[in-house]
Length: 635
Image (cartoon, rainbow, N blue to C red; front, side):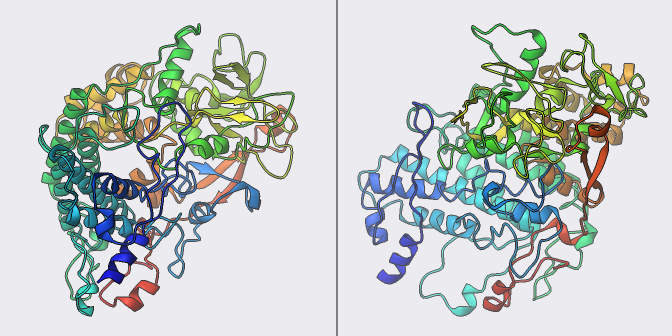
């Protein structure tokens, strides 16, 4: 028995984290290596260390190459092949190019990826829950909170696997050392059973306001990044909206997906009550967020003088990038400075008189994303009756009235008269980039300051991801100072859009419009009703359920752009088989003249095989050890 206990404990990785500010995250703890479970739960201090190791099992979602929703789809593209100096893992880029496989799956979180195993995280949660009564010096209120945290984390690990793999085994308790071989061979559970189990765990974690997780973090010096009641309810809302969506609700594509005993893993019958539950979950999460004082972020410039357009742009950028801002429901602080690599990947050379190779600038949005955003009138570019969609790829000259563009410059019509989120999220040749140290001009034709100068470290599409770069980043000739921020696993804008979607599906368009218009107002846009009535070729589109669904989905894709959400949204809406089968385009970045540079270039013909690619493959080795396990369809 002691050998078994030693194995369980020593399988937990130690954690070392350094936060980039005077405030420390609760993750700034290095657990001691302990030999037995008895030692791990000998007292309050050792038990707390064990809890922190569970948090350390969370994936590093703020890194573009470990977040499975970021580089695996069509939001970003990168030059290929990539120099060995310019990446940590090729897995996400390979998946985007159709190179996923079942022998050695890419981003294999089922077994282990980035030293993270979701099953190990679940096992550690169960160990804590089974041993939480052992420390004699643990106060009852602390014990209650730690139990709630462990339940949340166990739910989140199950959720992470569910989103990637679909029906999964439910590991509610660890098997004893005396378990038979047959007991060890677990089976996948039906989708509805998995969802109900995760939802129940999140309810238990959230409690009723008096028990369970706290409404907010009160000890900012030591506990930033730990979960709260709003976080649990928000993740439940995301779970139930996903479960109500077409991929999991009434999907006949998986009717024949069954366990080895013939039990069905998908229910092919649509259930409207799933949307009812999702709507209630979203409302409960919003109420909890309101109680905790969470609100949509608004930029306050302080001593810096900025115009109204810049304020709106910073409303959008800092909702993601400002540390611990008012909109954050749950921020992932794994690795201490979780978004430092992300910002270096995203930011181009901002200075014109030197090059700092720490700024890679290779996280390149695709042209598809540039076309996604609305016009300045708040409607899609192909619907705005006042916007020249046909000639969007033709060159135009800028004037002083084009405030988001450099004056006396030339760029394509696609970049004129767009909504604030377009200019806040993306940068391109002829655009501007506002930072704490001033305004930077993006000029990225061949041999220009932000353009391609060598065989590596450049944007293959000609676009840059401004949204993910904190405005306090400072580039010098010898260093880049980066202010990292917790990765927003969930923020209020995301939750509002989930609620709008669920409300529309339950025939409550007034609520859907109310919450979507709150998002639009923060982004400097008029209401959906005003924008479509006055500028759309289909002015009554928002008055029908199907039309409003289309509007909500595009609004969500815009609001959540570049945050690792699009890939999962396209899947749950069952639109990935259409959208991810479209070509990837960029600009002719190796050219020097306006005319030559602004030519659309085909970069890749992307392929998405349905229904196979809706879920990750399980490594074939698992089926040798467990014949009761079944592979996902198509693999």
